[in-house]
Image 1 (cartoon, rainbow, N blue to C red):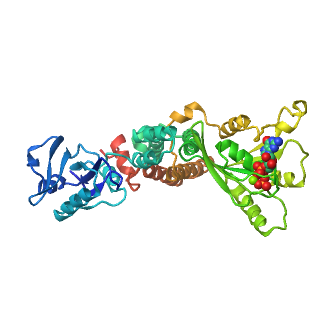
Image 2 (image 1 turned 180 degrees about the horizontal axis):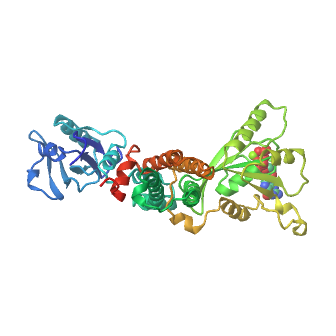
Image 3 (image 1 turned 120 degrees about the vertical axis):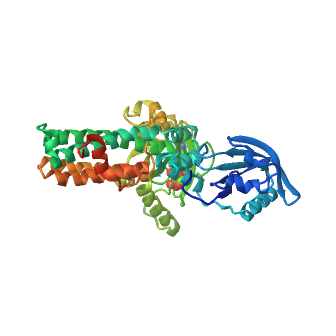
Length: 447
Ligand SMILES: Nc1nc2c(ncn2[C@@H]2O[C@H](COP(=O)(O)OP(=O)(O)OP(=O)(O)O)[C@@H](O)[C@H]2O)c(=O)[nH]1
Ligand SMILES: [Mg+2]
């Protein structure tokens, strides 16, 4: 049984010449529609089946194909579905598309298969979102955590939170609306506050996982910042292991932002090499300096580069000041130019020239605070999910402060209800569910 009657089709493989292509069809009528142009009768397969035969346009054979036939609800979308595995010629695919629309199917819109799977309750919203993440993943680690979400592990982490909010809300309603039903069991403000606190604690843990999950999934923007000639571009090149940016002894070499990407132990670093920050008479260089300054604002992490072989000057100090509120690493480059005995034990030294940059890589990982365990921890790691988590936390915090002030319980439950509705929205359930139904189901107050 499906909720949407019309039948959709789309190419599931890339639209290029290849050995094979897969056309997916989904909707109640899928099997009937394909039956109109297939060489044998598909009605005789009442279980999920694999069938070999010809696609026919009148008497002409379009292609010899394999059909994967799925009967609702045992399919990805929960509807009747067919996958046609044909030869990977775009001409064949086009002819199959024409036949499909001739017999009443229509081209699918973006994400429509997953949407149907969601509407037919084959997936919750967190799982549906994980499919795109899985496809977009750039590292095996990012792919793994998307897979955890797809398998429902992330939802499992969140459900206890939703449950506790629901329980608390029900407790409050029952105690204050139907006091005769619960007798003299008191629900105290202190108890309510304790329960809210526990939920907030658990949300905080999930929010930490969210931040780390986002780093594993999307990587981080790392800006290399410093005055001219300290070796920023050399550091970029050493990290990339490629001569990407121009390096010269002339101060003010880099003007535009030079970008590169590396996979640093499973985390994608989007590196941004910038113009050396100083006051210059050069019109173009000044534009570069402005770009460097705005990059400081946008980056997730700043590498402030200082020269190990010279004293800090006013530019270095300005740069340290510009970056003081950002997550940053201060690194002394050109360590090959100084004597080992003059090194400060607390400073981080590297030599981009000698490609001795491992201490910097290690420090980046340390600052990002990603541990082995984080690569296998499910997380609510996209903006929607994280935003809703924050919103739930906010409502709970308001409810908590009202509890402290001994405000009327029905006022407190307004914020708890908001938190509850957001938690439903997080997993993609309709947020306007009637909480009273839940209460009656559990406590049988109505009987
Ligand atoms: N001895 C030594 N020289 C280095 C090191 N790193 C860079 N240099 C030299 O320092 C000079 C400037 O290097 P760049 O990488 O262009 O410096 P930058 O900070 O990008 O300079 P701008 O683009 O002008 O801001 C070049 O001559 C490099 O070869 C290092 O670790 N040791
Ligand atoms: Mg440079």
